[in-house]
Image: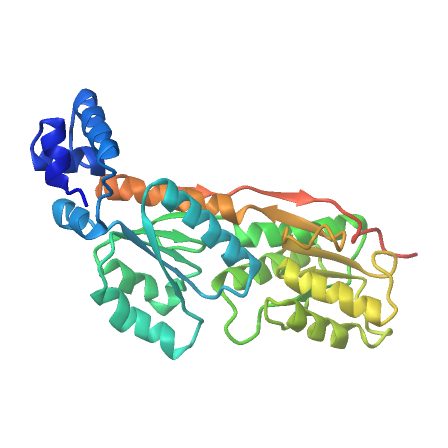
Length: 331
């Protein structure tokens, strides 16, 4: 098996120069770099990650923490992060840490402080729980996806704004009795709470009363909450805003089982543009979590290249997508 010394000898350079040329860290002229790459190819040499780490002081590993992998948003986000990290020849160490779990505390108290990694991407971290401050104390490059404090670069949609837009869409159609399905459940994320705030803000501005059916951000929980909300025809709302598409789809399924026609008897709008939203003809606010994952890696790469680089807050794209789950209320 060839070694870095063999590559260096074949290219006519020192081992240090060969290492810099293959790792991409440190200056090497383009001519020398190509000579080293050609020598490595001729010898079928593959750099060992441990050796590269010793030579550069970098591990080549990025830690990623998410509150759950059960939600479509976070699985798509991680997929985007992984794609971008592989393109950058970096490895991913993933931690799925559910809110309020003992595992979450262990990751913050024991795992992250002891493990070697170059940087960290944190999604859905609760600033109010001082978790962000604990991450900053690790003194590693850090980027957040979602709500943030001022000390980190971030990429996020404006959760409050998208929920307000979703609610205003229903108000513009003529609905005034609009309920919100989601949030106010145990372990609701800060993003979900802000979506609830956006709904309430829009309802208040329209002079309409808010109605909340607490639910987790899943189809089964959205279904259960909506089934209870819609069961009495005398108090049934004419429209529903789902905290996310999963909750909105659960609402559509509950309505169908109760014999309620969507949208002629009940309008439903979601947030996210889940992969199943088209199948349910769900009107929603679209975001692109894979793109947010790639953008998070770009922001982190900038921090790794220059720890003193200016902090960036990137507003992720979102847009209203009209399908067939919303309409004017029946006369």
